Amino acid sequence: METRHDFGSKIGAVLASAGSAVGLGNVWRFPTEVGNNGGAAFIFIYLLCIAFIGIPVMMSEFLIGRHTHTNTISAFAKLAPGKWWRIEGIAGVFVAFLILSYYIVISGWTLFYLIESVGGKLQADRDYSDVFNNFVSNPWMPVLAGVAFMAFTHFIIARGVQSGIEKSSKLMMPLLLFIIGILVVCSFGMPGSSKGLSFLLKPDFSKLTADVILSAVGQAFFSLSLAMGCLCTYASYFRADTNLPKTAVGVSVIDTVVAILSGFIIFPAVFSVDGVSVDAGPGLVFITLPSVFNIAFHHVPIIGYIFSAFFYLLLLLAALTSAISLHESVTAYVLEAFSLSRKRAAAAVSIACMTLGIVCSLSFGLLGDLKLFDMNIFELFDFTASKIILPIGGIIICLFTGWYLDRKLVESELTNQGKLRFKLFRIYYFIIRYVAPLAIAAVFLQEILS
Ligand code: TRP
Image 1 (cartoon, protein in one colour):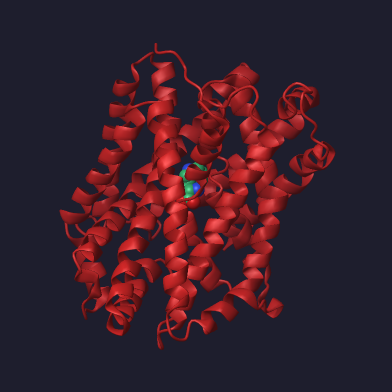
Image 2: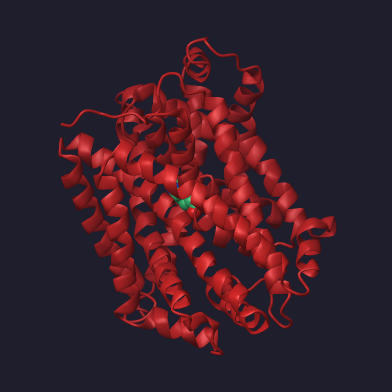
């Protein structure tokens, strides 16, 4: 077996974890949820969820990973030998695999849209809803795009922890933040953008229902990459002197800033066009936005061009850094459990995942009639992963750290064996024992009952 590497620097650890967190969830899912749930009031609740649930759960995953220095399955097995807790590790790796197989489908679409927009095809007068439907139901193009995306992911994973994951995050994350800056300026420059701003900034608390609050908790979990062992795996590469609470706060701040800025990119632009609705759902990014880019192109061609090409580049970078983290949590397990070389383990995971990914991709066309519980394969994967296994995993992580692990171990890991001060430990411990598991249980029950 190969020697286990650490992230070479603290900033590398932060950027890699932030790369995992910042993904399609920020640029695509967050604005969709904001649109569906009434704007500023949702954002307010979302921020509370990040601060009071997301950050403590992230710290728990970090401490499990760093304490054990191994893949997620072995981490739970090591801390609780012979106990049922290890199911959490198994579920984590399984779900990472499942999510990756449909994540690459949407990432493939993004790659295709990037190529189209660079080629000037997204600036033409077309019916973008037809364009989208024809593309996703085509048997070849989306599959090809997904394979290409998987090849990028594979290449980075195969290069290893330091020269693959860490190096690419150090390059891609600053680039991503830079692109966001450009896009915010483009979006504010659209005529009529102020309507979008007030949607994002003026909370209307009468829109707050239980459902909105629960959607905010769910979004916080997805966006921070929690409950599936992804961050646990990354934390197993953290060095002994990494400050876990600070890293969790840093990663969450980056993730939240990117989500909110994505809102500032999308809504002013969308509101600048009459007759386009903000709650267009998943089509927001692939149907509504191209129409907006087209109109921007008519106003000022260069802005329309830059806007659309950079937007899909942003989405692609965000997707890639997250896909890498999903891939790594599976690869780390395969590599360590079967004593394979990294290249072989990565290849096995890529091939298996791609096979499942192709099936997912075809569920928008050839295999569209194959349905279970009224969902196609893609929807079924997404549902099982994010609506069932993810919340249960979240609850288990809270119970594991809050009730099973020795309090001394938890405190000592979070303070680097007493070398750091962590003043808020008691609040953290209270949240992880009571607040977080109950809150997640509420989301879960609500999702299941509706
Ligand atoms: N957080 C990523 C996003 O926002 C998706 C993701 C990556 C994820 N790894 C995860 C979600 C683990 C849940 C669990 O798109």
